[in-house]
Every structure is written in structure tokens, then in C-alpha cells.
Amino acid sequence: MQYQNKILLLSFVASVILSLIIVPILRKLKVGQIERKEGPQSHLKKQGTPTMGGIIMILVIIALGIFMYYDYQKDQASTAIALLPLLGVTVGFGFIGFIDDFKKLVLKNTKGLSPKAKMIGLLIVSVAYSIILTKVLNIGTDTYIPFIKEYMKLPIWIYIPFAVFVMLATTNAINLTDGIDGLSTSVTTIILTCLTVISILLGIKEVTIFGSILIGACLGFLLFNLHPAKVMMGDTGSLMLGGAIASIALYMKMPLLLIILAIIPIIETLSVMLQVAYFKKTGNRIFKMAPIHHHFELSGWKENKIVSVFSIVTLIFCIIGLVSI
Image (cartoon, rainbow, N blue to C red):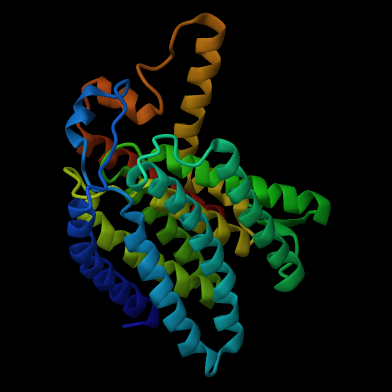
């Protein structure tokens, strides 16, 4: 069994064990899901489902990330050091989501973090990571163009705003995808698996290690997040996963590949933008409800069917993405 499989299995087991411990604690503390009255009526029965479950994945990532850092520091110091920015930015985004969830669910402040405060937090983490990539790790500003199979070197003054945009857009898209049981977890696990496979093909060991930790953590969490969900990830999980995907893609110089791999989160985001723009202009709606997964739900699709179809679409586009490199 290769090292990445061992890491993935260890992460999966840790995620399952932590879920068995933390989910009952969240239930006891009544850290429950708050459903919007204007949302699908079928979701009202989910009111009170333990949420903020993203802390399960974050704890696994922190524990195994630190363990792998010290393990590889012995004879592969460069790999160990390269793990830290990936770990830091992922946990950083998750921490911002945690503050938002904590204010809403524990402190009972229904507004949570203000949009301005949340955006400032995400912006700080994104800018810091972009600077670390270019000024500390010195990976350069080369960006891979899928299918053309060539790298395009961007000026630093273009690259950093571009990298920040990728990170903010990805976290927002994954956050919007987190609307029904197991959807965001399933889709992001497939995307992370594809990125990890690419890292194996390219021999980027630090990404392979970190990706394996993430995949295992997601799969363990997914056992409790599939319909009917015993726990929701909350912004803690969705922002963390968005940050993880974006940080890995940027580290491998392949942010443009996300246009292919993250087709479902992109469609989810576009559906919201189109719905809002069209409604403001005409007073009518294009979809029954946005993001688009709610449209299919209100059209009679069961949650499991939506998750299955969206996951299959993601898998197909991930295969296309692999072909493009």
C-alpha cells in the first residue's frame, strides 16, 4: 500500500471516530441547523440538525497535517515546510467560517459575521497565501492552460489579484453548493481526488499528502452527511473546503483547471447571479429557486438523486480535466 493510501485511510478513520464523538456533543449543545422559511418547505424538517460539523474535518486536517509535517521534517524538510501554507490557508478559511457559525448558532446572533467582516477575513487569508506562494515559496507566476498544455507567465501585479479572485470565487461557489445533504461534500471530494491524482502524476508530494488527508476527512464526514444528514458542515466546512481546493490548484499552477473540475459549483454560482439579475430586471424568475440544486428539488427530484447526478457530472468533468493536462 502506497503512502498516500495509508494517509487517506488514517484520515478516514480519524474523521469517523471524531464524528462519532462530536456529532452527539453538537446535538447536546443544540447547535442546530436554522432553515429559512423562504427555502424549500421539505427542508423545515431539518431544523435542529447538528451543524458546524466542518470542525470535524478541520481537526483531522490539523492533527494529521502536523503529524505529517514532523514525520517528513526528518528527511524531507522541503516537503514538510511546503505543507504548512496549504494547511494554514485551509484552516484560515475554515476559522472564518467557524466564527460565522459560532455567532449564529451558539451566540444566537442570526446575522453571524457581517458580509463586510467575512469578506475582509477571506481577503486577508487570500492575499497572505498569494504573497507566500510568490515571495516565500517562489513557485513563480506561471499558470497552466488546459488543453493548450502550456504555461503562461503572468506579471506579479496581475497574478496576485488573479489568485485572490480564484480563492474568493472558489470559496463562495463551494459555499453555495452546500444546500442539500451530502452535495457539497460529495462534489468537493471528487474534485480533491482529481487534484490529488494530478499531483501524483506530477510528483508534487506535499500536495499528494495534503490531498490524501483532505479526501479521507471528507469521506469519513460524508458517512454522517449523506441524506438524511446527521450533521451539516456549515460555513466552517464549506469555506474550508473551498479554500483547500483553491490553494491546491494555485500551488500546482493550475487554477484555470478549476473551470473544468468545479463545473457544478460554477453552475451553482451562475444560477444565483442569473436569478438575481433577471429578477431585478423583469420581476420574474428563471429558476424555481436558486442555487440550481433547489430548482431540481422543487421540480420533484429527491436529494439523493441530485447528489448522484451532480457527482456524476463532476466526475465526468474531472476526467475531461485529466485529459486536458
